[in-house]
Image (cartoon, rainbow, N blue to C red):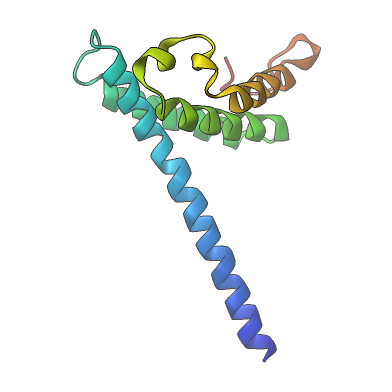
Length: 126
């Protein structure tokens, strides 16, 4: 009985991790597609370049040992997932049409946390 419960527990954990990975893997594509849609001056290859740079930046943040860097990666994904759902008018506004206030606040807090003490704690945080 214990073995069955352990296997079921591990399966549940695996499925939840796969779900989380799938969602975070989709954000760069949807964000960059929305960026391409909203900025008609971009070249055709800009979307693909955006995806590669986006993934590299998230990976670099996650490669840092500091938990603030991991929080910034997660906050970036959350904010950009929200931004991707907006129409182009709101996507381009500094306040995102006030549609993503919670993820924007979390992102700004995460950025501030990486810059405490006057230095940048994360190698990928600009």
